[in-house]
Image (cartoon, rainbow, N blue to C red; front, side, top):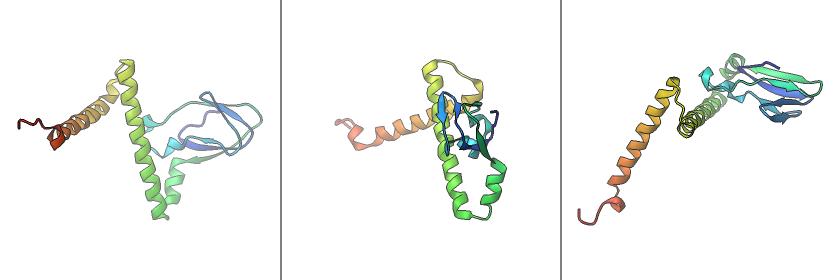
Length: 133
């Protein structure tokens, strides 16, 4: 099953995707709310039994949300949180594996800059000052 960039819900049957079994009412593709396609996970699914999959494309979701301001805000917040988790995941993966993709250099710059800012703030707190100052 090659469905990318959309939310997929198993209406009937069982599928396997990325080593997990997804049964009725299970879903994947929730990262379709992310604007950056390179933050989305792309892996195909395989039907284990006869399956029926319901799909919702990103453009259709955002079109439906145009009339529901509060819900649109909730989805936008969820997208920001998910994007931040993906950024941290990319950063940690590259740091621990020792491999660096130039596509993600901005991720390293962003997170390392924030880490430096935090350290600077920590040194200004009274509990971090030496007693001789």
